[in-house]
Length: 593
Image (cartoon, rainbow, N blue to C red; front, side):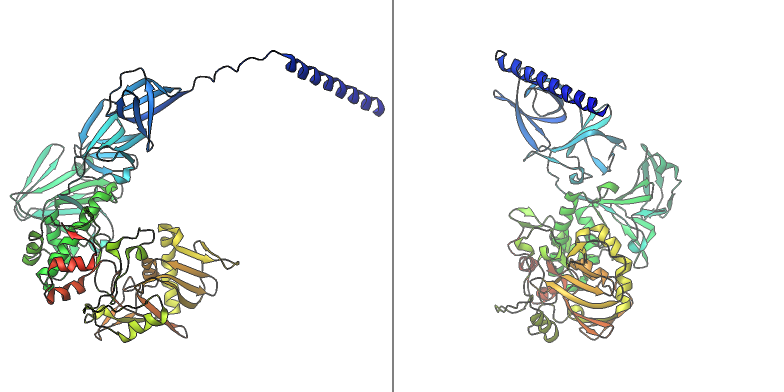
């Protein structure tokens, strides 16, 4: 039986082979014909920008690319449309004609809130175009809130496109007022009064309040449930916010305050002019005793920084440009005063510019005698000349130090070989001792949040001696802490903590300062004074000495070290420098415009 099966299979294979050969021969003797044309390709594109129409064709802009197409249709430029393409020719077009100039108040993941009170959802293929100056497609994170420089294009009530039609000319700022202690943007209750009377504006109606009368808002307030509420003081008065403490006091606020109910609580937005904002930023960021020229320098820095934040859109999801904490600029922690108002008014409209563009004018408290470059502090930042670090010696000598060298840096900190603008201030030099157990506790409590914020800046050593981005679960007992990279100027940008269970490399000055924070330790300062505990190490200009299980950090300066030292500015002013002298010293190549 098996023999017959094998024979049958063999015969079948022969017959199949013969059939294949016949097919091949048939193909070989068939006459040759030209291949038919490729099937018509139909492509549909939604919400494109019709950029230009010429005799040569139509230029369409979509996904950051300009493409020219042929068409037999009459096409209108400067419009948003859906188009149908057939073999690179526009064969059908549907214009999105419902275009309205709108002021966007908030930008969220699923849509936008407008000053009219309307909440509009994004179309699935919503596109955002900047159509003035250089044509480009941008993201919702690039939208500025509070300014009428946008046209919103609708398709069946959904937002199918947003057109940025002009440059924002910042004259007002929207500040998110945080809770007491700067713990949250979301309040559970709000209480506001006015020194001159006020009115609530909600749903097209006005509700008047006399001077001193308190308006209270909880999460169940009927006005907030219907939409945004605006509190407007009468006759140029100010608003007293009674549910927020700053330095153990309630503060008065200029401008108006908007309240919006969210799932997390009530957002409070203080909307006011730039200069009104700066009246209460300058004294919160710099002691008014520092003199008028230093205060003017601070005002120009703060105005420049505010301008850049207005354009950034970082807090657009809650309808703000900035908040009132150290995450941006401290606002109204100290009340405005005669000196701060004078400093702002005498520099009104003036900003720091580089090649005609306003800069983010970073500043900090005290230098160690050398400032840092921005790209060394904020990894990933492009290197720019005006944020380059430099020696702060108060003489005109050309002294230089290689502070990347560990021995040279230690000598610079310990022996203070030169006099600098900051030499006389308490934070010029400092030291603090931490136990290994304290460092372990601080590190392990905060490291997961830092990995979440930027995974590439926390690396764990693997068996192959490589460091890989990871979240260390248990570092074990601290065995050593060493500087692995020190940038020009002396700031530490990489540090390795070796534990009994893991070795971790920490990158960036902020991570280093946060993860080594001396929360419950005494910090000894340059003038012999002490400070009990901080939530950040004073600066990352430091070196480390180990003694058993103790680690002593010797450092200099207070803050990130980029841009203007506020204490240095005060000394320059004391020596007769003008605010322009101060600013052009700290921001090389910049102009006060």
